[in-house]
Image (cartoon, rainbow, N blue to C red; front, side, top):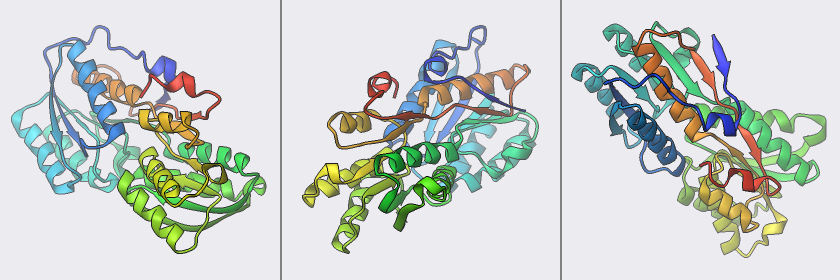
Length: 310
């Protein structure tokens, strides 16, 4: 079973009425030091607090082994349920097996593990369709540059569902007749981070690459690209730049005329949905194995609608 939640306005108002019980949830985050993940983390904490649920929050610091240990420690400590934002999608199967063996409810948020199509009992996933994010971004960028020109792709951490899905969405759009004139001259990872994004774009410019478009798997890398282009004296109206997440920094860059496209990833919708789902499992209530929170295209034309959401 799967379900799709409504758009930003509705998803942002998701509630958990009637769920307030003395429960303890362990939350294993892939990384604290990330703008979008910080919003996700805070929304999970705030929603749980409002329901009277105790949250034990742990930071894996991008370390797969550390996150596995955190999940095992949650199980050993007797938490009622666990939420995991994976460091790497492929690491999810081991955590799924450990939780299933112990009978502890487990919800993955954002990154979808391979086991998602065949979850054991008491397990679920809440997130978004990553391919759609790339599709929305690429379709708008294609439109803005007239369907032709050289482009570069800044990928997120290799192996993550976001990197795979968003990049796939970009490639699929560029294979369509209207966008087949766009040539990807290079694509490399900048690990979803601003400074590596700046460094990568600087290297491209130094090597003689002059892109008409930048497809970045997230906003932080897009902002890094903007900083590099500005430092090199490239007029911002000569390059169309797209990101994903619609973070506050990204929307500020869009308002300043630097970022052209982003895609809203609803941190509150995902965070609230994950908390509500794990509580449904804990209480023995019906729950969905997969819950999709929609991505939404953001451009200067509708920027104002998203300024307070992430």
